[in-house]
Length: 275
Image 1 (cartoon, rainbow, N blue to C red):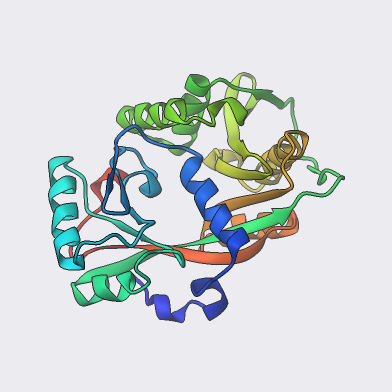
Image 2 (tube, one colour; image 1 turned 90 degrees about the vertical axis):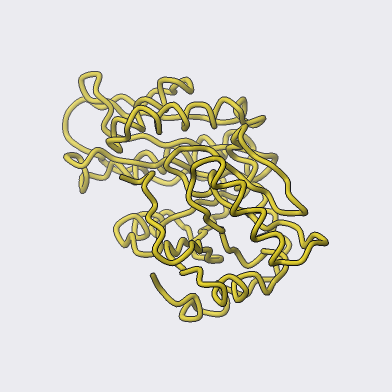
């Protein structure tokens, strides 16, 4: 838990059309089939690890009273047997939603930073990721979801949900997925999803035993090169605000913080899907 008011204003209060476009691209990058539009709010119900795919995204103001809409959301998520989560960005509608939820007992948690990087002509140097033979091949969706799940230690249900979410995306044909392997075993992975001139980097993960050897930077550099080759002019990613090692890697590659988002949940609710 944390106080969103402690986030710098320039990351919390944003009125920028380019960043609104990044936010929209992030929602488009992986669309679960389990979703509903309820009076301007996008309710997503994918039973996987990613909270953005199983939370309320308030993208439209709608017409109903907020108390009525909150009760509707409670019912829908109870039926789906999922915790009720709201994803709060600088672009939520109405703009008073975060304060409304706070006053109704919803606690803030999981601050995330959205970082962007302009894509120039020269690819960033990947560096020397590690000793030994490392392959960095492209992967199909099922192979990629399995590799990411193995690296994260995800249960089978979350791996299936991740695979299904990627398969449902209308942008799946413009996504490039990388799996780095040593002796056939995955040691790192990541994907880039390209939408016109915008590319998002997702699912960047390194095996615990291989961290600190440059693999995170190597796979990120590969994805940036893929994005550039695919015609993207700007890249974005979403990273835990407290993940200092990852943020150092991304900063070294040219990414900067552009805005923050966080989640709210009813006080006392446990996010069982992460256990």
